[in-house]
Image (cartoon, rainbow, N blue to C red; front, side, top):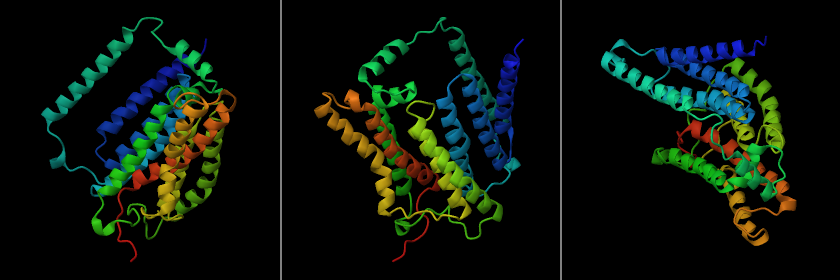
Length: 317
């Protein structure tokens, strides 16, 4: 008898236990660590559900970038400290939050259990549309994102740029043009420096590999870009690399490169392929890889800037 069902049950129980721990922990740093562990466990869950692309995204974003963002937010809110007794929510508010969470979870479970078997799906129509577009990609996830719903994919990356602009806009006027403050460390810890020097080169190679194989295997631009972003954040947190000034021209070019190239090629599709965001069938795959290369650059630049926050020091005059 296979042990996989029992391992799946243990994994599900572990996910629930870590989720409860993350909510119940009174120490902010412990909660962040629990959240990161929760994200990594969810990556294993997606693997067991045969969704490796989602698992890679969850591990890079949910277990990596978001954890750094939460730690940075904790420092901005006054440091990683224990929540005092007088700062805890009252029993009534805690009970209300618990009841609402249980109601939402129960409603989701009911919806899932009431789905017909097999559930309704547009997968055959989507596959037919992808093959008709001539994308020539072996990874159906990448084919859907870059061929079937390419306009939505471009808009998602533009949202990242707008988010960075929004974060920068809350900085003080006299700090505009400077570097984000949270990543500037006067005396980095030696273990952190060693980790950055050892981990970053390997992580960069893996990120590039994940992007390159994403056309035919699990991976793609977002997963590879998120991993490159995480490596850049690690080096900045260790002081190995200094955060860039927000008025650096190369940084702004990197931020807009992906959506700009995507939009230009989409407009060109109306001329050479007969439709907006269409690709010539014979050149679809290399064109998509060309677009994704610039998308990786924009994602790798945008995510660290979102985590770093607004400029926090006066620029040199």
